[in-house]
Image 1: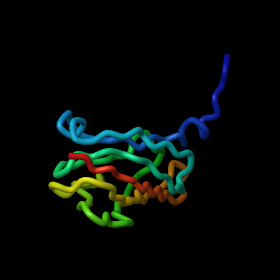
Image 2 (image 1 turned 60 degrees about the horizontal axis):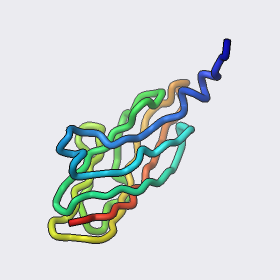
Image 3 (image 1 turned 90 degrees about the horizontal axis):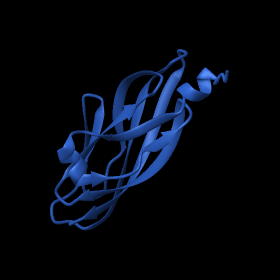
Length: 125
């Protein structure tokens, strides 16, 4: 029988696009993986001009208490609804943009959790 260390498995976390099929048609990007409750990671994605994407965190061991936009985009708009950050590309714009959001909370063992995700965005027509 193979035993897997619970900490190693439980701290492997994926941050994925969140939303219904309408969001899936307007955004694309690979999940972002990190293995610590204190992390700064980056990921690329593509968004259609004038459309938006919402993001959520999946599988993190602990409790998210707050989500903040830690770097505002230069061109589009970003915000937080509930605990889910979102990005909306400027209508008619085509090119690059970037922003970052941070999930803040308590890890599964009671320590601090602060995960910052920087998104490099390509806006397409």
